[in-house]
Length: 400
Image (cartoon, rainbow, N blue to C red; front, side):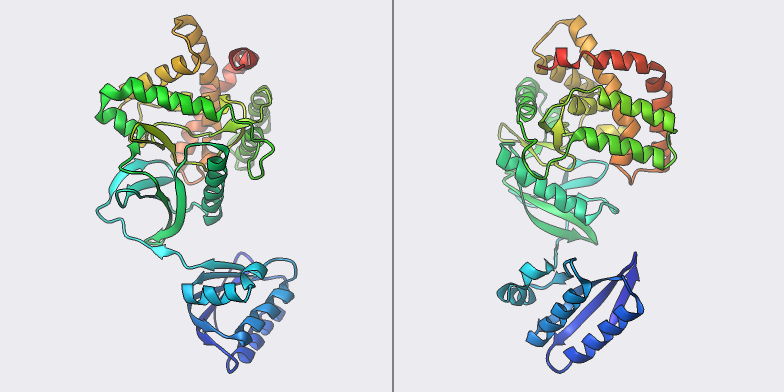
């Protein structure tokens, strides 16, 4: 019996066939393993399993009973073996996960790139969002679930229908994206469409902010999320307790709202398809005040000189700043320069707040980038916290 141990979990690899002849011996080995490691979690990897009989199913059921309340996990199950589990209703009793389809993106066109993922076109109507190493599978599954909930709520999002692997990394395949490209890349390639695209982008942006979703299961409070990120920055030694208190004070100043917030709605991860906006990134969606979204816009504009940021958004710095200015003008329905300057200043403070928490949102970033954002917070946000709080007091005035 092959096994692999780590983090108080033992993975047992099932191979070939499990039938009446070999099931008793395998069960004895599993019982011996559990007796020698009390409290250890057990999971099975069925990648090399070709067949399982009723005797094998009884073995798994006995392990499930020994584990108590937690569902037994059986991973990498082939289609044929999965059918056996489904037919016998074991899929209701245990966490049975099908083996992921392996795909190849060699030569595929990159249509979007972010800190945590790269989007490839793999067909006329399909793209795959390939996640960076280190992004947990559970986070990806959570994003897929949130995307479906957002679609039901009325957000124009693409349907994710397949979880795949690419050279060991996880990816999600989306359909209903006929020759779509990101908003940023479309603006760069077709500057004459800027005004039209911005109007449609802002319309979807404001529509999301008008959806009341607090009562829908699966969505979390953005205030809670940002507070947890602040606590995480203190826990990892980035900020002192006093500094964390200042961050949480600014978060607390945001009025409570139960409307949808995307939390990363920008030109690099929103698609443009045949004159329509299609959203594909739902990793941090929740409910709260729209300032949590506009903070991202201010953050991106502030660091628009970064080559990496320009690559992510598919635009040069000039277009990124033009994009931000037009978004604010359309969102607040004003061309008044003084009013827009005041709104932009308010958003900038929350953009700095987002920067302070950025290393918790993207835990896989380099230590140098993490240190950069901590330094930026100490240089530009903490010394101006009174101004930031004064600006926050006007949130109810600007957002009706």
